[in-house]
Image (cartoon, rainbow, N blue to C red):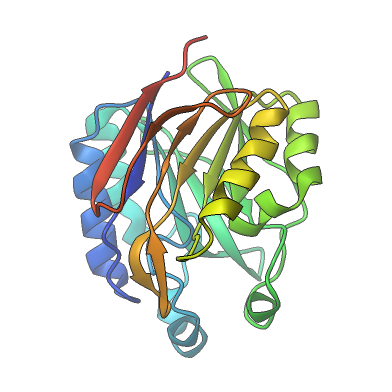
Length: 234
């Protein structure tokens, strides 16, 4: 399975522009799986999300069609970060699209910061999806700070920990520590995080792929709209 972790340019709270940019990147992807950061379709723009119901998305929202078309064009799976409305609940979510443009799964972040609890509800379930003979366990940002999250996914049979996140400047050690926990359970780790500013926070990039045990297979620096590719063999 060839994976691509992406550090996209995310326009603050501009859903249409970000969908267009995500679709562009997916159309040029040379991978079986593309992973985007936490809330990549809006950025972590909590004030805008609180004020504008139009920024929230359901899994079948017609505005997501350009992403579905791009997945079909490239025959790629995609893990996309979005403000998710599902069963009447608001979540920090990941939407997994398949190579036919279909919705494979949704995942709602289970571990929230205090500021996030004012706007979002925590998810209640772990999610594992199969891609290319691999079992991918989904995670979003603070999930990785809870060792039980990675442990439960590993015990359930996940062999790749797919983490969409925001690590701000000064959290480089935290990033490596959390990657190391998941890798310590014998999983590959695929991390997509931001470069540049979102929600008033400055991120440093560093997205990448790590082998079981914690050795880096590939990492990005601080580039925007760049890819880190790696092949995870069966």
